[in-house]
Image (cartoon, rainbow, N blue to C red; front, side, top):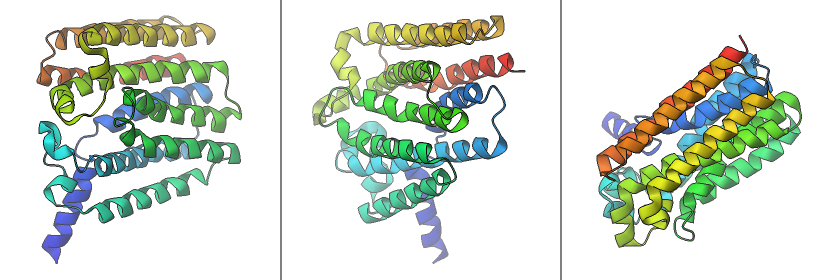
Length: 287
């Protein structure tokens, strides 16, 4: 019995990516950008806890439904061939039950917020649920991931300010562009396998222009974040952090220059530092 419990816990750990927190970081930092700006640098503890826990839970739920959607094709991809739904550690029914449990937990958090934010959360759940299936119908599944990863920013402004100002939508668009950029790097890792099994992605869509498009999206992200800083009259600390982010983007371009799998994956992981340095710039402005 104890062995079975341990096996099930390991399956839950693996399918929710608890052992790989990069996705949580990439969702958390932009949420914090919005939360800090929306709260003038001083989010109350309840709001901070709700959104922090919400990020972790929704990221976990997204991973579960992603693996459920890909359960019949993950075995054909080198990077995903040992996931729990492929190797038998977890059944499809168990995965759906786990997804429902996580969504229920997220709902419990959202019910502590205003009705407007509750209504907005429906969009968040919808985006999280449909994203994994988009790779079958569109060459732009990363666009749906970007929207899913950015919607919490809109909710943060709604809850903290009771409205969604222009700055919120600029941050949303900046994060969407950034997400498409780094997830294209991620998709470059699987491009050869995806072509064989018929899965769509921006890495396949952009083809030999992938590095140029990623660069354009990175520049657009920086331009939008600079505009946010200009509107909010942020000073040199924020601007210096954006210059630092530009340097990190340049390093990522060097990593993906030869489109090698391991290097592309490292470039994807490196984006954690981009999110962090932008947050540091925002936080300093409110000290």
